[in-house]
Image (cartoon, rainbow, N blue to C red; front, side, top):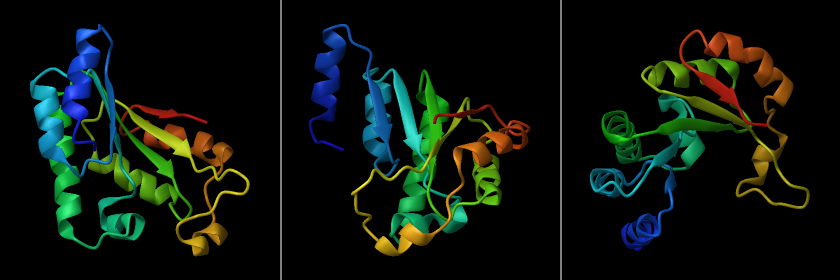
Length: 157
């Protein structure tokens, strides 16, 4: 997050704009402050993987990352006017993983799935992931009814 996020959000609000914050949830203190001061109208929190696989998908082994994400989730549930949790379904994530995530966010207003897309010519941080299978748009669409038994889900393709 930019150290200027609070000032920028305040300026946008003064100009009459609605402010959406996209976050990975690792800075819950800033999120709490922005929501407390009414500087954010909508929050989109990216959940990378089920909690049991978070380190694998973030490259961060520390438990502190997961603690921060969970604190951000609680803050959103308690203070956000409107929000979504979302997962870009990266290679290697399975339907079982998506079910696990849904069960970890049972109070969510909305859970959004985004298919993984790699533009031609774009490199991955870890090229070994290129060969991992990823769920297709069709597979995700077919799986939505199962997830909707737990919470509201949308597919953004």
